[in-house]
Image 1 (cartoon, rainbow, N blue to C red):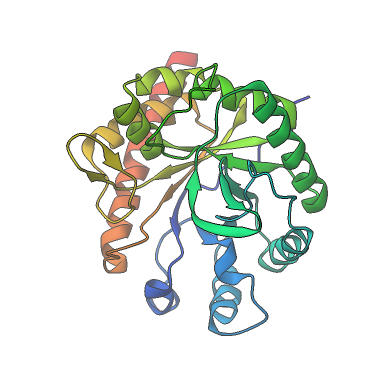
Image 2: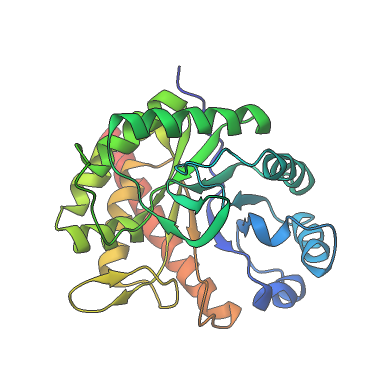
Length: 283
């Protein structure tokens, strides 16, 4: 039985320290914020101070970078305890992390490494997601990562791999549209085929971000404006997954709040048009 999706939040923005004061001062017309989990998994300090202030005014969701769902090390139970505590404190609408591995022999690699697409990995990851959901007491959301290499051991497409994990773990997906575009360019598959292959009832959230095009390959950097081709792919995704909330990410070369809010406004316009088009088809 598919776990129910959480209600759509609208258009959100990744919460970054550079914008804390501007958010509290200007109270921007943004629907929600996404926090990087590890930045707030602390005992005290300014990060939690600002988080408490912002959650008084806006819904938030949590997005982690170090759970290492595909790793071979045992899940860190201390981390899971802190994850649950932060979810309770922030009132997070849902919690997400990446479909990847980030640690080996208890050493953090500080990157998001892709996985081989094979049955044993599906079973391994699904079991770990079930454990995370047991601790959280709520459905968990997994994000597709961008990739630059492929594994000889892979026996299926990335979307078939993800779909089986979603089914086995009964979890949801954070569909990073930019990551789909990046990986499609790097590996030569069709981005639209990826989007159309994901089940409609599994996508909880979108990510939109910029990247660095190096000519022969693209690197997911989150330090540039979103390009037109990614906006176009987002329009396709928004029409298919009308229930998904949308998040703008910016992690480096962070501009003033007004500039990223302009991207949020563009996402809102595209989403509104996509939802109207989807309703016409269903009418």
